[in-house]
Image (cartoon, rainbow, N blue to C red; front, side, top):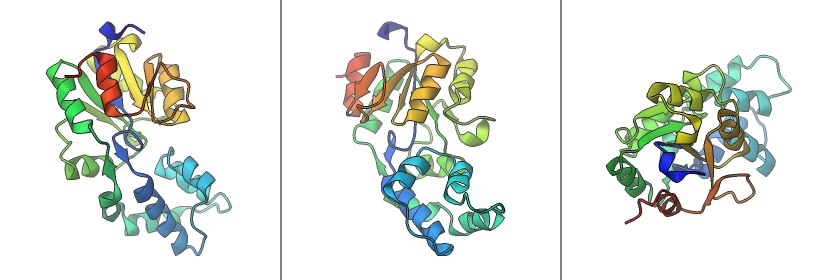
Length: 210
């Protein structure tokens, strides 16, 4: 891995920019409760935490064919009230500032859809990224590499100029398919070029730490 070639750092959202476990669990548990279903099991949570909302609905309600009532419920409940349960990762703001100061492109590649902009606004991060690509912006969400490919195309980047930071097998697979470098965040079990336990580890790898 040639660190000197990297020009862009791309972040996943859930589990990287934010600890969203509590928020996501509360959200899906409320949806399930509306249909008199039990709360998420740990295995179900691990799956939906990586998925788009549409895929999560298909997974959690695999026994039905008409998902319209579920999507109506999702819209009625909304995600906004769960945003306060999200916790921004320690050291993130400092890392984003340092990346900008050193000329790095900062981007987000997430399987979130219409909630991402509100999340960034609520945590004063909406001006901290040069590009944000959600599942709504592509035909194929992660683990497909389209999100990363879209970012590379926008800035005329080669795969070896991109470091993607993620925390799931979907992220790992997207990075490998796109040919970018991959940093596994707090997930030592993933195959990665870098294993980071904190945002400061990314700073140290890129040699931009103070």
